[in-house]
Structures are given as structure tokens and as C-alpha cells.
Amino acid sequence: FSKTLTLPLKRLATQAKKLADGDNTAISAVQGNDEISELTNALLYLSQANREHSEKALSEKTKIETILQNMSDGIMAFDSDGKLSHINPVAMRLLNRKFVDDITFNKFFKEVNADITLESLQYMPADDGVERQITVGKHVLQLSFAIASQPAGDGGVIVIIHDVTKHEKLEKSRRDFVANVSHELRTPITVIKSYSDILADTPDA
Image 1 (cartoon, rainbow, N blue to C red):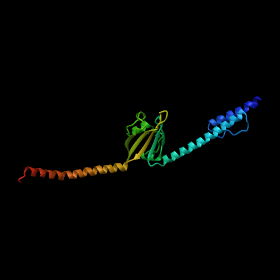
Image 2: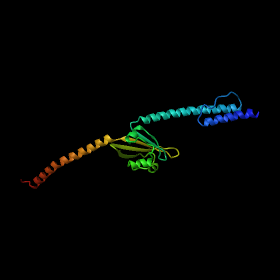
Image 3: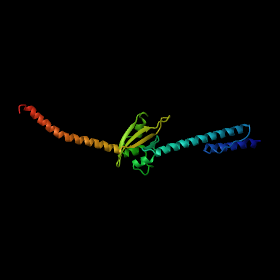
Image 4: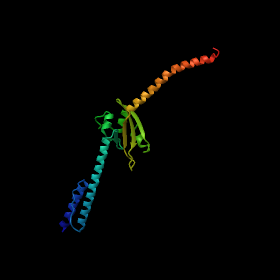
């Protein structure tokens, strides 16, 4: 009688441990109206729900990773301790990095002269956007920092990297053009002004 009572409980306990370790196939349905059968079937329902939730979470994760991998902008994600948790290929190319195992928030952004720390960001309101502009090789990069807010208030940081090299070149060309035009116009205008002053001083000439 003791074995009849304890063996199903031991077997169920073993199955429950496997379920806790992530094995959603550890429990199978049983027939019966006793409490052990009801408990086993309840755990089976829990394992099925857990499996569906895991599959859905994996699907969503895959979608997000696919989006991040194919974005035209660079993406970096850091946890609340400043450790790099994600970086897409575009970010690696723009930052000229082949290895990322050594990247931590404060160390990395100090190296690229971004003038920002994780601590300063964490004390800012989540709605306040923070931007920095850096130069890496021949690339001029616009960095946008955002706190990944969590209910506990200890979220990480998302960094979006946009290549503004072409824009900066166009802006420099515009500034140079305006400066050149201003210089070219200044000389004849100065001459005209000088003649005008002379004519004004000698009205009878």
C-alpha cells in the first residue's frame, strides 16, 4: 500500500523537476479520478502552456533579431551594468570592429570621445533623448541613446548609430560656398562703398 501511494508521487516529483528544467515533454496524460491523476494532468496542462509560451517567445525573439540584423542603422544594446548584450552587423562595420567581447559602455564611449557615461544616462528621464556625434575613420556617426525602461527601473541602454557622413560633407560644402561667395562679394562691395563715400564727400565734382 505504501509503495502504491509513494511510487506515483516520486515519479511525479521527478517529472516535475524535469519540467522545471525546461523539459516540456516530461509529463504525459494519465487516466483516473484520484488526486495524483488530477495533479499529473494539471502539471501536463502547465507544461503545454509553458511550451506554447516558449515557442511564442522564441518566434518573437527571432522576428526582432531578424529586424535588427537587417536595419540600415547600427544598433547596440547594453544591460544595466553596461555590458554589451547585442550589436548588429551594421554597427560593427560603422564602428570598424571585428570583435566585441571587450566592449563595455563607459570604456567604449570614452575611447570614441562620445562624452557620455552610463551613470549620467540612468539619471535622465526616459523621455529625454540624448545624442552625440563622433568620427570613426572616415565616418561621421550620429549616436542616439535611449533608456530601455523596466518596471524595476534598472533597464539597459539602446544606442542607434546613423551614418551622417554624406550629410556632413554636403553641409561643409554649403558652408564653404557661402564663405567663398561672401568673400568674393566683399571686395567689389568695398570698392563701390569707397567710391560712394568719395562722391558723397565731393558733391560738386
